[in-house]
Structure formats: structure tokens, C-alpha cells
Image 1: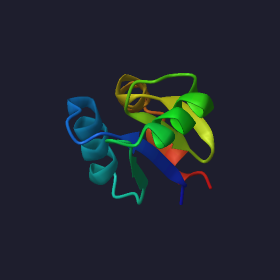
Image 2: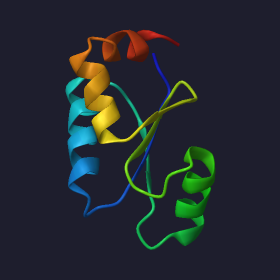
Image 3: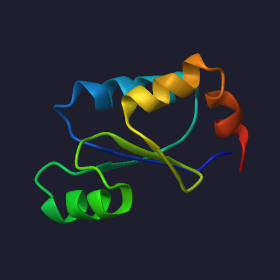
Length: 85
């Protein structure tokens, strides 16, 4: 099973959509909320090169955000990525 990390905020509709897709796939993920946590947001930005949320990693590979996650799904590549461990 894949290792998944997703940095989120509570008020972000893209975070909600990304989490919805991951839950639909029945995969476990580590959600890291950066609400009111500039230290965590800075860590996320340093790792990803982006300050927007969500930021998603699958098996240590930075996927990007919600659009990239859904892009992988529409290309039929997400299931394989989630199955790799």
C-alpha cells in the first residue's frame, strides 16, 4: 500500500476534493493541517516549492495539488501509483 501525505487547510475546497478522491480509493493517508501553523506551511513550501494547498506526496514523490491528483485519475495512472509500495 502506498504512503500518502497531504498538506491541507480546513477552508480549502481543493483540499476537500482531493481528500474525497483519496477516501473513494479506500487508501490511508497522513493529513497535515497547516491552518494557523506557519512552521508547517513553511516546511511544506520548502519540500514542494509551492505555498498553495493541497500539496500531495505518494510514496515520497511529490504529485502536486488537487488538479494533478485528478489528472492522474483521469489518465488512469492513479490506481497504479497507489498500488505501488
